[in-house]
Image (tube, rainbow, N blue to C red; front, top):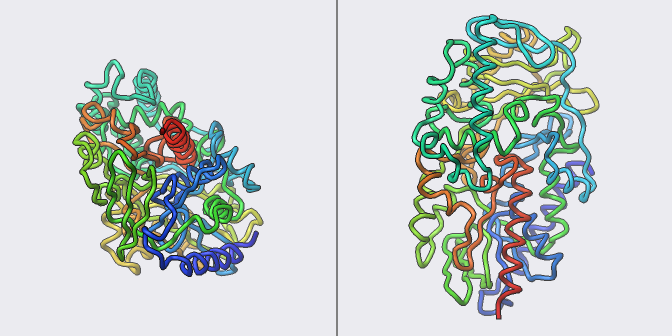
Length: 480
């Protein structure tokens, strides 16, 4: 389907939903389940429950579905992802969902030479390994080996139970890097990886969370590679199509523009109140919102202390994603793939994001972690200058003449407050990790951060939605 059709359809659905929202809770049928959040996790949970015959209602704060998945448009009307976008090998949950929804993928362009600027050295290379000094390459290799060895000892379903959990969780990933890599170039590489994967600095997150993340993906290569890794393919028509098609199927069971403010719960069920005072009653509720936003909901009675403390220790990363549009993908004619990484440029990671038809040319770059902090303070014009300066440094002066720049600052999104996902600070997992997925009375938790495979990715969101639906259905079936 064309992107414009999706937008038109969602607007129609929104208007239809609003027409029937005048009733207060007392005049509405009690739902089996209210799902808070119409991102992928919440919509998957709702669709599973609906298909199982349960009465379900989804409440979404935004005027759209998709959460951290969002399509925008290039100047010619072609859809372009400004949020999450990639799928890769081993991400079986999202691939099965794409098949069910009739969505297809196409390969991320990776043909040609990649650009790497690491440790003060620029190299052009093919394949996985940039041309660095033998000492730096050896350091990166042994550092990766140590990280993956540590990750193999971390069970993704209960990272806090790992034999070395206390040692890993008691230090930041930055400390771990300093203790386990020995060259300036090796440490710079691992910092760049941290920014690209977590949109955070190594000092921000627990080393145990980093090991959990690697374990959940099946290795560091799976996280950082294009071919054979998490960036291998893109979704035709944009990743938001997943949420749009699920919402089409759920129809009037999704309510847009309904930010949840209060959840009252007890042994009898829940009452969910949105801004404006509308209340919705249900037997159970699934919270499928980012942890910092969940922490902003008022629960009566309050959440158990462990769950509340965990939410306080799960901040979001910070990323500004910029799609830069050109008449043609000029870098391909020069034998370049469009993929570039640098440990000295604020725009540290770049990919070819050209549509499958081959035009217009699009380079997508990311300000991540501390670079996003600084870029956000520059203003739109300043960011554009910074982006074009870095792209020209990578690809030459032609990069300074774009047709358009399309940016999205996810920390500025009221109902995201960051990306790509949340992570835990030191000592959070070992002290409170058992509360990550455990239901609290009639309250259940979904979201990619709660996944045991591919946490932080679309695949993890799908997994978490299926799990939350199973838990909730089992609880409903067991009720007297």
